[in-house]
Image (tube, rainbow, N blue to C red; front, top):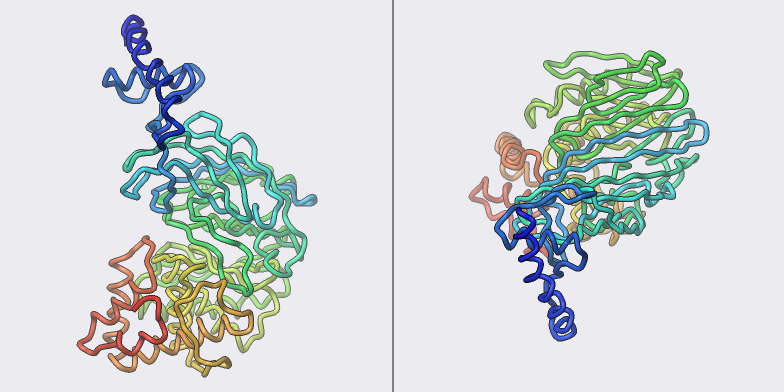
Length: 473
């Protein structure tokens, strides 16, 4: 706007600021401009102009005010640039997040979750929001980024988070999620990702995560020594020395990285899905591949097409079997008699969590019970629970270590399998296919799944579920 107009509007804005300062103790009010830059922007808004660019700052859709809320309902893309010093286990880099607020109301803070916070002694650099520094804080796995105002519904912003962390060197407890051990690097849920405040510590091995799908993410990953890097995306380039790779990922809830100097790979095509198995020497690669092919074939017949063009089965440093979008981790030493069940369970997560997500910390039934029911039905391994009958609507934090699996997986899976028996196998799986199509790439609740099954039949299924889900009925 012309300089004269700006001066006139500043003359109107600045006295208002003094009045607001006097009234502030009496009532909460939106935060107005408090610096010359903000005052100039306020003047531009009074003149009817959109977001402005001032010296040293990027254009922004963020407006003054306080919303006292964040939301997981955001569509975000991620551009990650990371460097790993393999021997010292030091990880450094940054992620640029471009996020649109799809929550229907304004937000004034962004919650990001990363295992670097819980396991890697995360150190943040200068976090910026639309080019302006933000006083980000961290607690456990959650990073909170104040936006400096309100991001309205439908508006977008760009957040840059520089980070440094040190990987663990063990696989005990949860350390295997972010470690360099047994010749393998594991990076799981390490990228700061839009989420909710979610406690990482829990009394069992439940997944303390909730992440919306990103339509697109990119990764540039550099290692100080040559190693074979496996990522759940498409590799788009590799440097001449083999130490820098770039990747593109579509419709993912995480960027999962695994690396080892001596990974070997075998693969097989299953319809339009490439199944690839990556292991170090000594692991029965052919047996793992056969179990993975069996899982994909049977699951597609019941649930519909596998969601991505490639399924990667990767030997991890240790811990448990673990799912990621387009990838499954399998540690060495899985008993041959358990391999088919374990792979069926983890590959089934590609539909229940990968394709249709949920809050895995607060509502684990929606993915774990459903996944285990399908896995045990297809492998013929249904069994009784080894714990007393309990409720199925609790968070992961409310189950003991000894009964989390027995209640959520076994009792929950058996309840769902009993439902299959009541309404018939054909109708049951047809209902699951509709449920997956209706909520594709979304986040759902346990009640969403139960309602879909209940609505598929004239039988009153809900009346039989009330005692097991007292908070839902």
